[in-house]
Image (cartoon, rainbow, N blue to C red; front, side):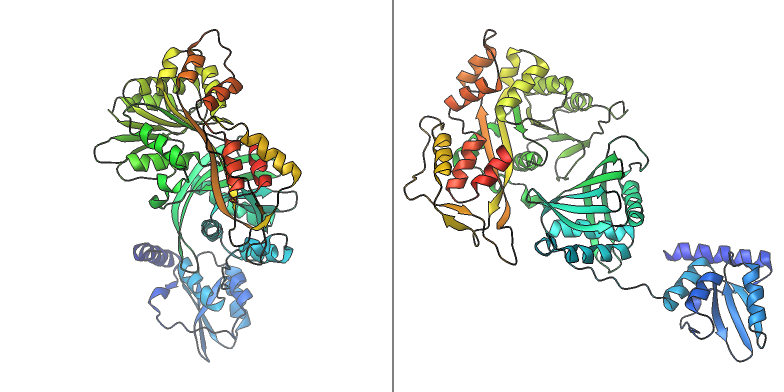
Length: 536
């Protein structure tokens, strides 16, 4: 509490004492507070809501609050009949300060979560769970976010069950259970999350929110909480997923995307052009926004005006104008398309659209790309070819559409083998067959790896890393608008499907995600099981 607020409370308490014709004591001015432990038990101090302030053989002065009952005061006079009993009103804050001295809060030791210990070991999950039961809701949220960042987790999942609530962290694409909460503690936590994220705990609809605040924990640590909030009502309560945002701008560079030399050359060439549409596609959690932010960070110079339209703004970049859009259906905050049209009147050089999700936004983005703007956008699709067919379904056959597209990049994230633990082995006959099937579909002229004496790798294990994986890497496919693709898309008689677009793109030297992933398997960066887990 600030000094001004405490002063206001003390003055209000003093006025109340005059009305009740009682003495008043400002406990904030008592520097050396004496605690008379033998007079009343701690529980009695709580129950009666009184504090012994001064005690000698003949006199006892009790501090009482405006909510202390007359019955409690009468009972004290009857109990201490050999002493003169007096009462003085003290503020509620003064009472709480004294009680913190009589009954100090239990010191909570915040242990670092170790998923290698908690995985499959109930006692470690119980240890974290017991710790979380002791702390206030804000501290619990800050602790979970701080631990998730420490473990490079992308999401925190809070999932209601019949008798308790499970908390899991998604690390390298895999969920790990780390704690269970009682339903009572969950209700406290969910109320704090809902209040901070501006969502309702009683809504029957899925909701989105954003929490961006700094929390001072009881142990003195300051934690920046910056998460996207997704909630959905279930039969047991409201489930929450919090997606973490990394606040380190140095993370968003093209050098850290793991692009091959040829892929990087194409990206550099395309984003250097003054106009056109660049689409990054993939499912949720595939790193699309990170890729777009890395492009934006590269383009962010004094000579360019860059505006983004996002739902929500995930990371704030100096020098870039960022607009947050709330796209709830029926809302009054305006759609992506409305904001995009307004943005185009601000004379931007580069525009980023957080997601193309409807016909209006798609058409507006394409028109902007045709009229001298470089437009970067994300799109939900399973592959680069599928993205084009979905866009075609949205806007219909339109020759201008083909002219606007510059680059389509699809990506997924797979786990990377821990180089210190991975174990070599000779591929089985079935694995040889899969390798040859995939490599046989590589584009003409593409460099093929030498398979002589090929060894694949499987994850090893250690006490520090029982899973054998460390971090993630992206597998990608990307293509530009080649003559083959242009002819296919502009020909009204051609049957445009994801397969026909992919075939045309491969003929124009595109490498598919499966091919890219298989090359990473051959290079010993990941496993075949991991590749097929992600690409199907």
